[in-house]
Length: 297
Image (cartoon, rainbow, N blue to C red):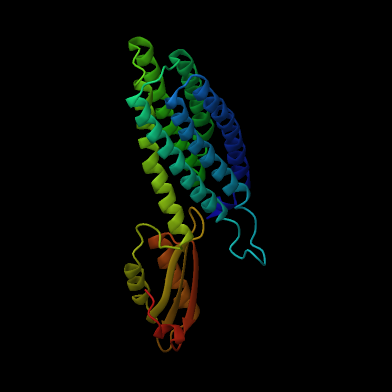
């Protein structure tokens, strides 16, 4: 848990993310402009992919800077959900971009347009260099921060997109086949869509306060009920407050003579050790409260 308070590490990660974001964001605008100038749909599609990188970097940076703010009287859970809102917006926007690229790509296959392969190749190579530099910057913190690791994987995936554009540009230059450009664009679009869907699905689940993937409430209920001193459990909830902070709350009914604090600590320890739940709130009761009569999962 001490890693969450590693201010020096957070500052270093913040600096690395800021530099990578500046490089990626600057080249993103350059790639969009080049896509229109050289009439390359593949470059525009790769720019959409690079947009996911810039968004991932911005979200990770915001998570460190805004997410570190303390809760206040109005936002009692703090600001960690900011990154989830940004991720959901990013996913919705990317769906629109990907659909545009797919539709335009099909139209260009039916009616190919001339592409300036030399300019396309130069821009794609520059994009690859930017990806490699960003990966180098983020590699030092990817094993210590989930946010940095996620951003690193985004940049790594975009590097593959840049390689695809380079191959496409070389093929067009050698063969003169303009339809290769929209084919590469469609391939990149199809590569982005599944990742976009996962991003939207995960962010939506967090906003709906769904149980984390892989967590089975029936198992957690058994663990709590099987703890010495526990007569029953109800009103059990497990959810995620941010991208990586899992929380749980429950009402625990005590057997006669059980020490409330001992039972609470025992249950908390089991949930923390067995299910990696970080923020646990337990209400102990001698007599089940009114909520016990309501159907809770």
